[in-house]
Length: 370
Ligand code: SF4
Image 1 (tube, rainbow, N blue to C red):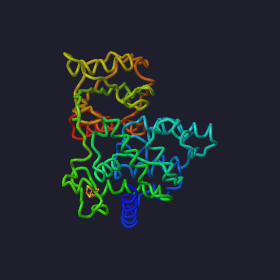
Image 2 (cartoon, rainbow, N blue to C red):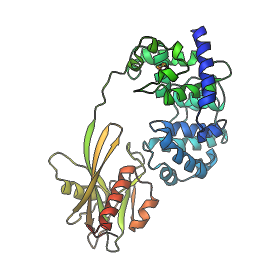
Image 3 (tube, rainbow, N blue to C red):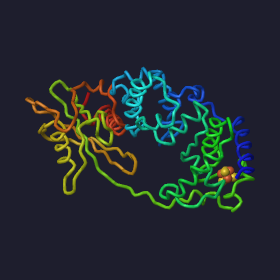
Image 4 (cartoon, rainbow, N blue to C red):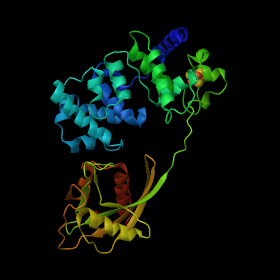
């Protein structure tokens, strides 16, 4: 490994110096909080999608201290649209722990970092290597792909513990002394720009001559992922309940809910077997806030994918009974708001899209809503 290690690091670092993208978090890469935020946002989300969210986040929560003292609602509002909201809640709790235990300084000790909510071996490695230049390895999807190909690593990195252990070992051994931060970012950058999943550009690759998968003539055979994603198709229904002042009821999901915890939504339920969509809409109102609504009217649907769930979200409207007295039965709390104010709440992406659909229908005169 050592001769190949030296050549690999040298070629990769030289390429990185010439080709690295000017990304907002790279301008603050010695600030461990900035690295922490960017790495959490980049999990499951592309660089292009993350940039505007990162800029808005850092403008509103520029330090650990500001984030720690912000209300959770505000934190979720700034995350809304990125998905996987547990990441935002963990960042918030993590900032509060850093304030309480370390006086607001993100620790540079691996064990202390790993004890913070939402920080696993990968994120800890990124913070330690990029912000503190410690020789800590990282292993994200891009690095897994590059190492699997350069060293023709066998086995499925998702399911085989032996393959994962081998990749962590290679990631650690490959780090050149004193350049951990740049080197780890260079591997991620190569995976993002050149050694892509479906179409690696081997002829433009700085480590082509060292790459075992290329030499074998089958770069895309690595990593050796085996499983096929199993999709779960679900039909959800959300109901727009209006009171006599034409305000809309929004319900906040319990913070501990695994999906969209702490976010706001139009009361929503998942259609059960044998249930019609209107029945499901009426049940959503009843389960969230204990309301028995009158006739329900459909206004459209949207499709959304989150994790392995392919969701069709149907929208219905209904008027609240004149003597309505909702109670927070299946939600943390609820509010009545005029339609124009709904955008100020932290809503999950499908809810935002359903409200856009509702607005379109109203503008086109197919629905009395405004
Ligand atoms: S030579 Fe091709 S497969 Fe190998 S690391 Fe470079 S881009 Fe990836």
